[in-house]
Length: 242
Ligand SMILES: Nc1ncnc2c1ncn2[C@@H]1O[C@H](COP(=O)(O)OP(=O)(O)O)[C@@H](O)[C@H]1O
Ligand SMILES: [Mg+2]
Image (cartoon, rainbow, N blue to C red; front, side, top):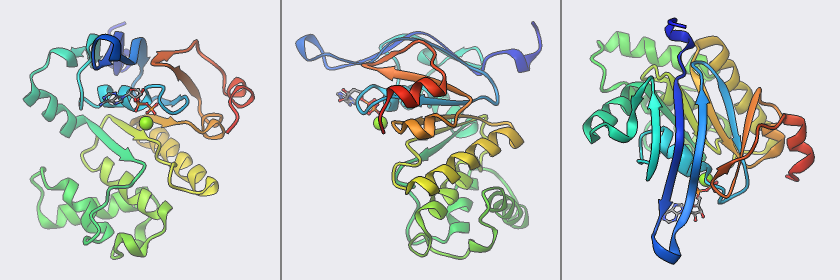
């Protein structure tokens, strides 16, 4: 198959990340093989301490594996120099965090605008892009509000708009619903899913919440740094009490 769209976005082969050494060694991520396709919506579920955040940091080029290959569009991240990793991160990856990480003194618009700064845009282009991004996350009329004037769900929408600003190929979301009530959390998951469906970004969403995982198309489950055999969302709800 030569069609670029059929190439995996990510391909992980035998990826491990160990912390410490000797008797204190922690195998945070342990010999993981995983393929992620362009535009895919993947949920990584698993209990606290199972290695989800470590895996996401490896995918996001924020960390390097101790062993194994992480191919992103067929380039091995483990071998790229730091400067190229930084460039790749800026141009192709969007991050969403549990804590929103918005700048409290800036309005919603300005928080998104900051993420557009690396791109050379005219003022009007920039304003149009910010408006379009806020629309995409359903926050059009809230642009002039400070984070403190927004609900948790609205703040997370701003942070998703910010993550989309560089037109990434993949959004990496680490427990994005962790600070939200369950109804708002479900709205955020639905939003990420519709973004992925409509705009084509792949999404990797981490959660320890089985009811969130149960709403995904594809779920992989981590335990002690390892990826368990594929499970269906139904298995998950039965196996994992929330
Ligand atoms: N910087 C670090 N130094 C040492 N151990 C770490 C570090 N980061 C994570 N760990 C350990 O690695 C394991 C996986 O952590 P993490 O990836 O944060 O799991 P999760 O996100 O699933 O809760 C845990 O046992 C954790 O204590
Ligand atoms: Mg974590």
